[in-house]
Length: 111
Image: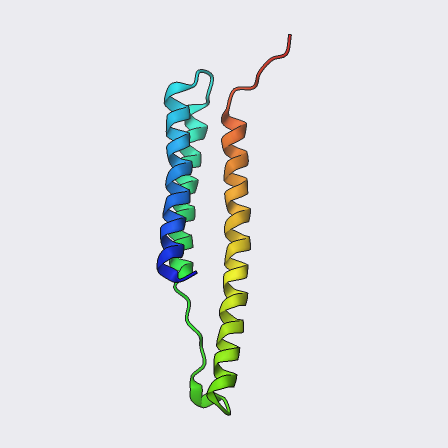
């Protein structure tokens, strides 16, 4: 996945989560609106920090390697490792936001 598509996906995911929070805060009875507004702020912060972390650069140049093949291999491994770490961090933060969204929802009382 290239950076442009990844950035679009981050915006889409965060936008959909924020939209769900806003709809829930306004149309579902018993939802804690203050908590939902805090969740929307957390989503905005997640989007901002995630978009800034997508633009990473490989800190080596081809002349640092014996040949172009080694450079490409090292560069590919660097980006795979960096994006795997980014994905894990994004998923963890998104899960905590979803947990906060669920906590703000009203709980059904069983009869």
